[in-house]
Amino acid sequence: MPKRLFFVLAVLILPLTLLYACAGLERGYVFPTQHPPEAELGSNRPMCTDCHDSRDDHVAYVDFNHTTFFTESHRSVAGRSAQVCAMCHQQSFCNSCHATGIELKPSVKDQSDTYRRMPHRGDYLTRHKMDGRLDPTSCYRCHGNPKAARTCAPCHG
Image 1 (cartoon, rainbow, N blue to C red):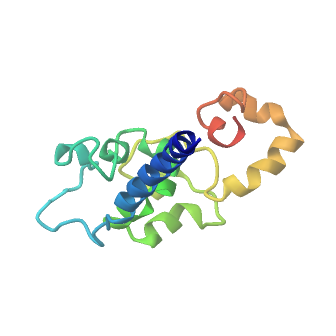
Image 2: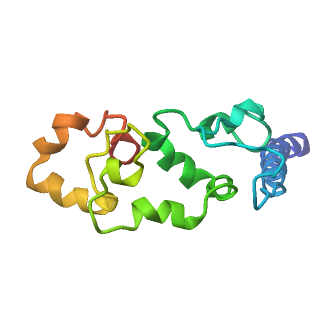
């Protein structure tokens, strides 16, 4: 009986100990408040993996590469690691799109960019539920099935 009790305790305690140790490692990393000044990013879209390993111990830098379509996927990245965004961007940068009541036209928002795939206002995330209930087919035209579409599935999938 004591051997069985020892085995059961070992099976229960070992995974908990490993989980606690891994959680302790994650909490120990603190992001810098500003991107190091010696790294000159210039006016081009920053590609974090030009200088950083694509995945190091603390950050998946490949997710933060500002590719052509980064504006479509930045929501999940920014929500997961807003501290990384804060190294280069002020809160006002986010607010210029997301805290506005007027329609954002790409030609006005960024006159040098040719990005034209943003048909919704900056506050549309809070309003799309109403439009979807009034006329769901208006969503399907561009997004397809909300359970499978790339832009809908993270919340509706």
